[in-house]
Image (cartoon, rainbow, N blue to C red; front, side, top):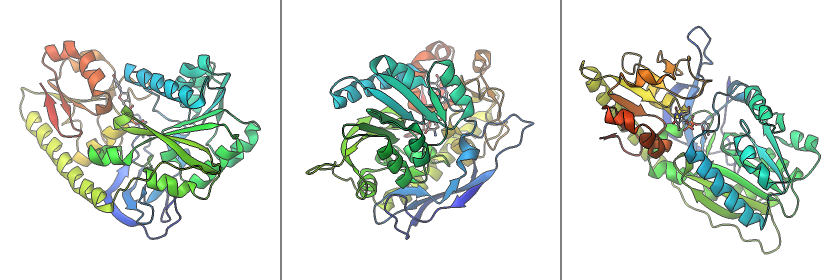
Length: 395
Ligand code: DWN
């Protein structure tokens, strides 16, 4: 199900240092019905490259296992729509006008391309998940069902004016081929926009629960500059967004004479080693809080948001159905399934939420919207427990 990874995917260095080790963990999106087989577990260990500072997992899980049928759909939240609007504004500014022919790599259910299509000459998606391609096609978004690689780029046999890759680059193992494929479908004025979680935000805000097998790399600027050195692209601009706990949009353009890349940042290995310790402390704190609440008949605790992040918390804390009665989630593909590695059911009905006194917010990256949306439940007494960046109960 996985292979070992020991050579830096950004700079090729072979001496990678272990900095975080969460042991064997289930796959974060392995939501299965009780009767169905689980995908299994794999080592969850982060290695650090002292040469270019890229943090990256020690294994690569087979993409076919992870993505052939993918339960995560782009959030239909207002938070995400607001982010799409920011993306559109910034991309049109970068293009100096409309988006032209748009290609999205990792286009999921077509939500972003649907949002952009009225500002584009054409929109085309690429995604490996059969279930997501079906949803995208139902929206009228032409989508090629495949992983992104240079062979696919050859098949497309055209170039695009705007190429977008949101939260897929950090999921990709062969960065050299990813970039080679981009070059095959771009031209001298193409704007390539790669959105990734920023490793600096992950470290600053204790977002250890975003470390899971889909996220092969934890991207920073020095590693990107190092990768691009030997390619036809350079890092022309970086735009920061708050989405998913803190992301950066890497604007890549064809390298021209005098092109000066965005300066590198610097993230040292000690910050990763410190996060390893903080993660254990934070999981112990949440475990203690939930165990104390569960010890009283006055309290009933559930989870809110069966995110990939929730899998890290549930398994790291050793929670069972006895600790969290269920995890509430609006995603149809997840309802009726069990949280990976646990016996905790995922439900979508609202009535069950009303039976609880506390809800651990595993979708903390949407906290503002969710806490506002659930004001009526909060008035009835439901308290949200927000685990990141620091554990706190929202009174
Ligand atoms: O990179 C990835 C990021 C971008 O998205 C993927 N590898 C996997 C995925 O991570 P995630 O599952 O942690 O993403 P979310 O969007 O933080 O998950 C939120 C979960 O909460 C979803 O299952 C939907 C659910 N939700 C809900 O039940 N009610 C979300 C909102 C806003 C709500 O109101």
